[in-house]
Image (cartoon, rainbow, N blue to C red; front, side, top):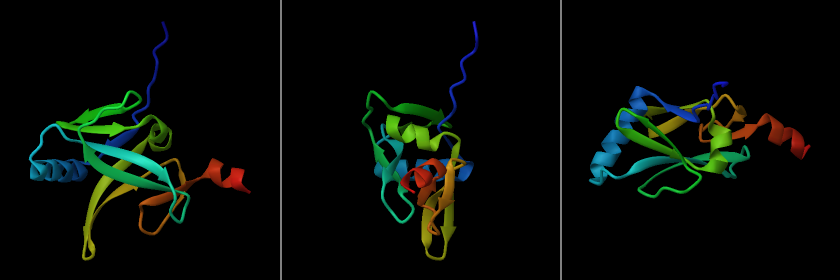
Length: 123
């Protein structure tokens, strides 16, 4: 029987994991997980979103690393395969930064992106 390869939709760096743990601890609810999602909009066509919740939908994919559960919905999964979430601090604040191999371009803020196939379908 052939082995089936299921790509990991998203990875978190050690810095991102530490920040997620800190934020969940601050909420005082260990049932929370990080939901990463993609929505339409923004200057580049798509944007990343992050939230904490304790809900699980039927089409969610769960990834667990170092005690942190990351959840990606079915629609967002296709856009996040192979992406890495990092945590960054600067003088202007902190943010999660997504490095996404599927993005053909990203916005200067790092939270919005476009896809090659989407750009060419619009033309």
